Length: 591
Image (cartoon, rainbow, N blue to C red):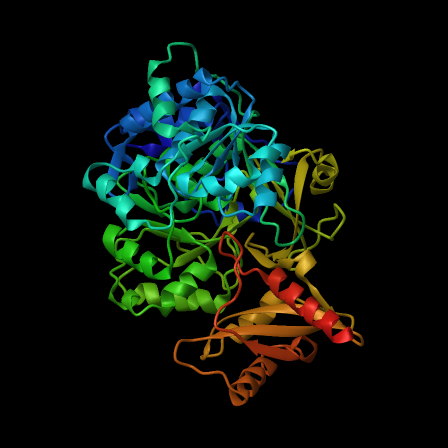
């Protein structure tokens, strides 16, 4: 089956091209090879593309949840039953419904069911703090919230503060069948039973109602309709709700599959990245289902279980943040892995250092893979990735070339002025996956989405980077993360790359700490490889090593060895936690 021709055109007269902005540089068109640089995108509900895939390969498995394999044909039935249930319980087109779930069948069924009947999925992390959950639900005006039984106590504590108190509760066993459904409850000792008087709607009753519903429920929406609300990571500022449309998701799925250049329907993807994150939802779920690929749903994992999952399922595609690949390198069990079946290994969500990429590539080669890890770049404001390393062309330090119909412009920060090739500036993006705006925040929207002199809307990412004459993009640093010491600009990723190149270092993170004389000084937090003990001698050795690779002003003035580094909820290194720790230390010393 020709996927490009048969799947991505669900209704041909509703597919639209994306116009090329006048005057923008497009050097990557020359190095794209056989990858189309312009496409046509389905301008309707994203569920239509999944239903078209289901018609093309109905017996392919859409998802696999602990061995419960569900075909695309049955998956569509589950979606329609849930869509009917939503209507039966009074949810209307345009309403927001919160999904506070890990990667489970109920999460993706409800996500697409909302799209089928025209409502909006408000995706939040189930481990968010209570104050955050209250804000996410109330700010989005959610009319219903789906969460797991194990999170019910948290919701019970905040329920009186929610504008809409309707709760839909599912159990992890609702997605299981057979003996696993029977035995699974005995493996959990920390999950409280639901109180008998709990005013909640159970998933099984919800679906039962949907099966009986006979009213209308299919909403034929437009590509410009909001499909989902995702939240920015919050590591560089206030967390904001990001409004993403049907077209955003449809474009991302087609672009990712096309730029990936490794897609086939007889494939599986280990869906570890969470559904409340753009990478997890946009790439590991929607893109995979769009192309007829099985999503292996993993609700919870740790590095050891990750290794076991790779051995058990032998997925064709894996995607994760750099810290996930770094963790894999630590494990003794990983040395036994056969990775010859891999067709695509994708890293995103955070910067992948040159040294870590080299280590992962060497690991892959040693374990039978002919592929290399491919780095992507993007922001939640563009769903997720919008730039990817080509499959067979790599430039050291580059995050690749833009996706089809996605245009990068490197501008002098806080201006619309494009800089010459090789010159550092702010990365600005124009393309079909760029968000509609921030929820209830017109001021931030206006600062981030700006109309340039070419008449087109550009996303100002707040990231610094360069572009070379072939169109390869190089991410340098978040603008807000730049360290200014004695008037010099220091980019933490540059220092981290130098530190990570030392043979004893597993990974590092660099921050700027306040300094009365220099304004900021550079401090490095270092995790050593297993079996290597920290010492003053090793600290000096690492600093001497860095001195041969960095200008003097960029050298760390402090080094702290740690067993691990703090992570955000989606697995990125939470450098802001380290910054706050240092600020607290400084304040304590003043008192």
